[in-house]
Image 1: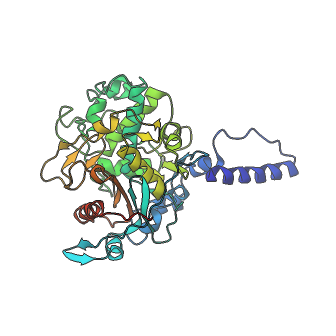
Image 2: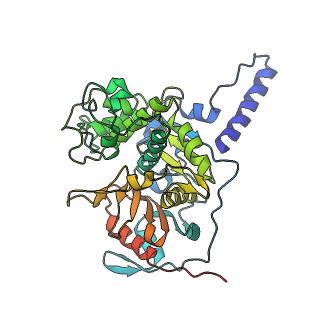
Image 3: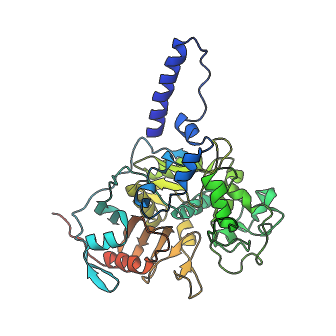
Amino acid sequence: MKFRVAAALATLALVGCEAASDVPVTEPHPFSLAETAGSEPPSAATIAMRWQWLNPEVNSFTFRNTHEVFAFREVDAPESTGELARRSALSMPAGAFAGENVTYDEWAERTFTNAFIVLRDGEIVFEDYRNRMTADTPHIAFSMSKTITAMLIGQALERGEIASLDDPVSSYVPALAEGGYGEATIHNLLEMRSGAAIEERYDFGDNPSLAGLIHQQAIVENVRRFAEFGVGIDSREAPGGEFNYATLDTAVLGWVLEEATGERIEDLTETRLWQPMGAEFDAHWLADGPVGTGRALNGMGFNAALRDFARLGQLMLDDGMVGETRVLPEGWLAQMTTMRPLDPESPRPGYGLQTWQFGDEEGAYAAVGLAGQYIYVHPASRTVVVKLSYYPPGAELDGEVADYFETIARTSTETTP
């Protein structure tokens, strides 16, 4: 909405100039001016800024309002917001960091926190914004976006647009028939067991890794589509084998969704998830190219405000229900969060369908994104925790974060009379 208001004002200004100079007024562009301008081929200065995205000197700020730098697609909030009630404030417990007892404020600073919220029984019991974040600031989700993709897959399955999770992805995208994705099923990709020869390793320079090349050409330069790197890719092993975390797998799932439904990811998100959920603020997907050509970066590019990420967590906790309205198919969250154990060397113990087992608490799970983005769901205490962060590259803080999330889940809240 806010992007479209700005676009409308800009359009009125342009129309006024044209009328004054007797230049014929053409039909308005079918997409918002903001999206169109934001999707033009990036200038050298824009590309240089995009390369600074993960720079630890500035990433507390580059992780927000990404539509100012990257191509994007809008996801409008509904006219009527699903209210999040507030309970008396949770007294935040002490945490631990590197073996030292710390206050919440100390823990939040040491774990590079931009914003933090706790829901208990669907009510806000704690909310904190830092580093000039505000309630309406959209923040990058990174790979929490994968969990949203799984939600959209479940909806398409229920509607019959996807016949079965056992269907090969190539039955929806024939271009994938030759190569490493040719025999892989939708279920294989949801579990990150496609068998395709892709390694989530970002080497750049003169001899970049495949993941590095995808980042450069699809995200930074917008000269190729992310998912289309899957066409003709080599096979690493037979589908369904070892777990191999790969954003390309999720990008291919997004391509399947668009072919199966005939709709763009941003439109599916808006009409099937964001608006039925009662989101409070507009969101946006980053994209890999111009409007009409580029696709939403559904494996890593969703952006939203803190409270709306919390609403997603509550939707998961409530098995896809918002009040009396069913948004996600009954039982789909149970499938998404049924974890297959991972190798003991893995930083997290299990993976479901685009969703992680997180910490040691039975039944707890999370959507997790690069640089410290978490939507944590603890069903036993009916707690949802969202942390938006700006980790420096290479930071490994899952242990401290999971321990603190579990401490919060075990902390009781007081009810105001």
